[in-house]
Image 1 (cartoon, one colour):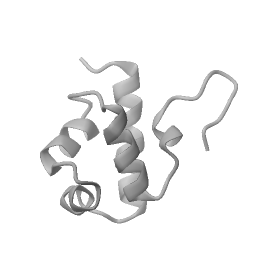
Image 2 (cartoon, rainbow, N blue to C red; image 1 turned 135 degrees about the vertical axis):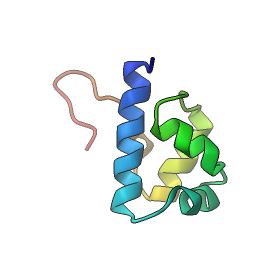
Image 3 (tube, helix red, strand yellow; image 1 turned 180 degrees about the vertical axis):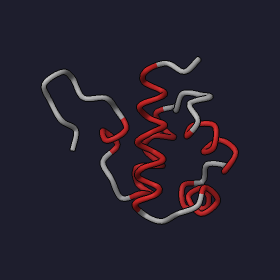
Image 4 (cartoon, rainbow, N blue to C red; image 1 turned 180 degrees about the horizontal axis):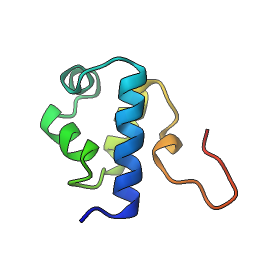
Length: 77
């Protein structure tokens, strides 16, 4: 079962990739992370490492904090 943090990350990653109209393979090429790992992250089968979060954020042109749940009463957007 996915942790709340992994589920949040998965949803944000899928949404960000969709906004850029990228396939998992295209994002893999941009980020240097395998498409298999991206699929696992998007399905919350594994938790992202810090380096992966940074690489994906850079590749998608968004702040890394987008992938992290905001503290109560705050927004990451």
